[in-house]
Image (tube, rainbow, N blue to C red; front, side, top):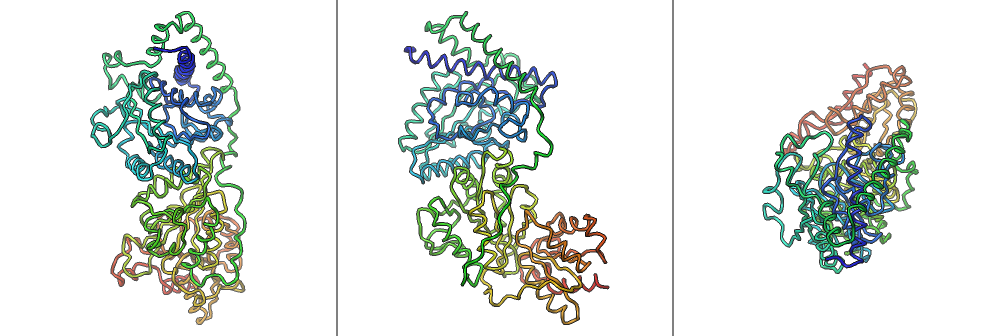
Length: 638
């Protein structure tokens, strides 16, 4: 039974739940009238509003797209929700993210990304940040039950258990993944989870009691909890779906409604009569209608605004390397990481990077700071996803991938979370995570799994800064820019050059009266300089333009060189199809000022369109060489 204080609280829950339900009803009507493009209802999930009372303002919520009632209880307003639905400039994403993909920086509501369970690893990162800082904050991460078949859900649970993080996972189990019954196929149905709390979440009071137990355990240092909430989805999956196609009328008639259950309880206890309920419903209808009408009259986002917040303020020029800078790139990486660790908010995270090994390339060897140079599990999605959460929490994480070839398992986090967070929240959230990895071939024994050049994948992803340093000085600058900037950065370290002593490297080709512009980055810069030396013996002056900050790229120096030479050769280690080099050629030849300066068709020197083989002879055969560059230059001159 309710005591008076509990009745007052329950009446507050009821009002929030009614607002959420009416919002869904009005949104469905507006969709049918053509006033909006899409809608995701949360009907049946409104009982989650009770979770808000167990949260502090400093706690973080990583929500699911059916969590409208919870976020209304957290403090988001009807105006916030309506602006999101109508994609107005006032919405949390300025009209960029899908409706119901909630975000509110001031309320610590982390932005929803559509790939399900992609919020779990960043949530673990937020929780780890709280633990590292000694805070007693809790992170609430919500997913649907079908999402528990995603590998990132298991990685996040495993990491939270390993680190005993203050993290409450809420699984919203409505028994359907769109149209597919999930009863026997979820993590719980397959008995893959233990120690799970399973409340009947169709009853807000029962859910509140289970939540109180879960939050007591987590806030008391007892480690993470999975709160498996059984509930019913009362509406179709989205406005594009019709659940009557796959659910019988009899099944739909049996669904449990948390609002009805709470109303009946309040009436039975004498805290509410039917007349008061009717009046409350009428008030809610008017409030929601007014919010919709205001949002519908709001201006549309200006087309030119779409480019804002892709990056933070323009990146400053690289800080000069100190005198007596390291002789190798590897030493420069170690020094840069040591410098970064002077900031107490810096955490370096990756596979095998802690003492005594210091990573497979020993780049973190001897750094100390054992509590902040931490071995990750063998799980690249965890490495990047946890890094995203750390960065969004305000820390300065740096993560190492052993080889860029292993970025595949982290691809979801890189493209879904890392690259989009600032843009999809119109700058409210930022993610200054530094990711570095050895890259490329030209080293014996790498083969297909350790020799790829994948810069084109990352330059294809808006919102990432991509750098490929060549010298120790550029390496120092790259890490300093990444660590002090506000954007995510991928630093690709050419393996061939890591141990090369810079004193042995060829000098930069000075501009002058040249016959051809040769553009290269990474290990190919060395090939280009070797080729330039050989061409000089033939009386040909090749002006080598070395790139290391690929995206965003300043094309100005290339245009200037091309104006002097009229001929262009671009050299890359990657395959030609859909590559950064191909884009570079396209960008220059479609620029009228550049096109009419060309004296010959440009050439692209690339790896042959095949994987890098293990045999060193085969590897040399498929990779670009100085001979290939010389041949391309002579072909252009002729």
